[in-house]
Length: 486
Image: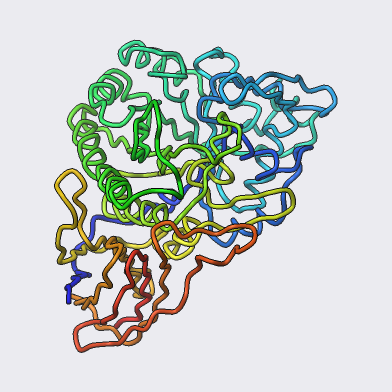
């Protein structure tokens, strides 16, 4: 039996609900056929499913698409909106039926905040500044009047603004020092129109472990921003070649995937050290606004649409990342999984009017109690699985406490063959009741439109003990323990 220790006497702080954020890009069928209908209207079935996750924030319109997106193309009467070519993703026609107003209607339906990624790569300072004014100006101004003309009287009050996306790559192939100067310039002209809605400005950050990028941006532009982003995808194969199948993979590929996912903690910690060293005392947050698995597309689908299936392996990747973000809530202020529907590690897959929930969706639903809760120090007694280049611990854990004293302990059993009996010791609190749910299956288990509930949460037997609780986790599983405590 392995021991898990949860110490209610120590905490890194409050887990920002925005760590459970999502990402929606004009890519493949994420928007049209996913979040929205072909004419830009909302898919109510998808919206209702996402509402059950308590989505806190949604990033849009990209990704790489953001730095080719000109926001005026997506406002006004739909019949007069400009048709463009999505040069980044498949070369398909984009008719701009889904623009600022439609996205904000979606956010209002979900009850979440909007995070806009602004066009720095091919746009202008004036264009970006006008977008902020269009969204946030409550008084009389040219952009506010244009918003009213388009049917919206009250401002949208968009708080989160990304100053470009992947400026080191598709966002302009810039050097970090050059981007830092551009970031300072753009930030200067992004104005706050209501002191009750201060802008939160997020610099385009590093790819993976490019710590020089983070240093250059924070050192040169830190006084003009509130956070800097970082992107890291779990790719078991060759980043630029064969990435591996989402469903047809070996045990080695399973463990390589988890091993690579665990690198997220190293990167979060190292980027945080760089930020704190070079920020000159200013609190600058870390935003991991693109993360998740990236595999080869499903056979027979458009390679530019990045459509992949979602298995229990993906569920474990989600659990590991969310546990890491929870435990680094003193530095990670937001994270956005890529992407919400039909793209990469999606919450939801659709096909025509059909919809299914993925294993990753279920992990987010099981973890939602961590949002805005007080992180608790936790530790799992583990053993190492597999060889060094595939090494992972058998258990991965995080914990939090709500204001009413209730605890949520989330544990992943990464062992694909053996169950994990665990004894959780609670320090600083006394458990009075406990219940648990578990998501489990073979590593390749997944939901299809013929069997949409093949992988779904189920009750897990758990017993109170004098010091906490005890349970046995099935192989390849994610468990959530809800503890009532004095």
